[in-house]
Image 1 (cartoon, rainbow, N blue to C red):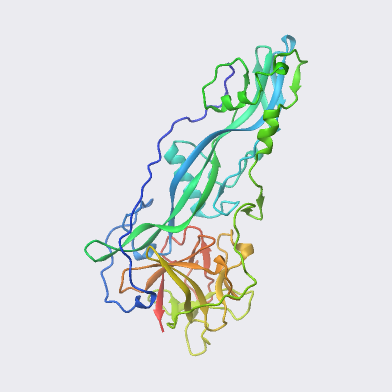
Image 2 (cartoon, rainbow, N blue to C red):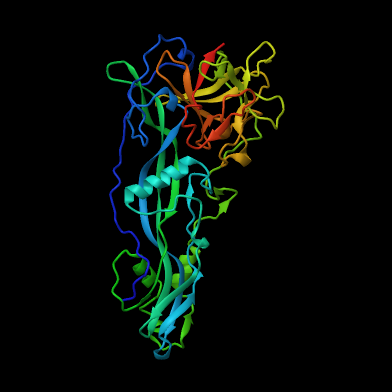
Length: 428
């Protein structure tokens, strides 16, 4: 039996699924500043929180990944059938062909720019006991040459392979929860955002013959299955060197997932209806979205190619600092709304071409039925106006780099972990 020279971790651990059931939720958006003040929770925020853990108001503008399911499948990435005769044994370098391409991805992004994707893949590796790729790469970045000592004649499959890991994740967000005694607390809960991920382990290479006994379910066994060992052609005499691909190899090569297109999977739903103006049902209450305890708040731009910035409010603001919540819905205590600006008549949005870009600037555009213009709002306990804001389509949290007049509001995949993604929704 031929064995790979590169060891691959085979330690496995079961991934424990954790669920949490939120208690009854209440209080509308207009009640954010109307309820009597409540004491802030005293618990500390865990570095890697679990559902039900205590969080603080500084966490409202942040999120963490929560791995819901994983699937591990041995995958052959490079392969070549190779025949070795009595006179051609010894070390040879075989140039393989690409069999399957595995590309690292988290959610809609074909590149791991922000901390959320890296944290998610890190949790996958830890839970399974594998060393997995946590940055944007693909198996095509690996050399396709396999150098092996063929010490016996026979029909071989020279291969490179990996453990492909796929699964689903959810977003853990900080939001208020009403407890059994009627009091309110901030807890990490499973938010409405989630998606799929793909990663892979370190590639191993080797060569395997039809008659070799190999572990079931291993990468080597997957390579052996491509040899078509039962056919008469496999048992016939061959000249030394490459063997034509079998039907199994061709079938595996064609069964590839859709290629990435502009940073999203070709089969993934995209935001729709950008050309149609939305019929907004806006609440009467007008708000400022302000930095807590400070004068700067979200100010919409006058120019279409500008972005939402931190601005001081004054009689000269021309209502560009005034926002309404429109088409509001609520699920499991999380508000979903469009943010309509009174000053320019547009809705807050992330531009479609920047949807997968970390630190993309929040802008305004003509209101439409478009998930890029929809936002989840996470709230502090009643009596506090503090909120966190998350884009529905991208899953990223809104925040700013620094507190300064003119500073852009941007999206961050994990939010601003220093608390600068927590804002106050103040009725005016």
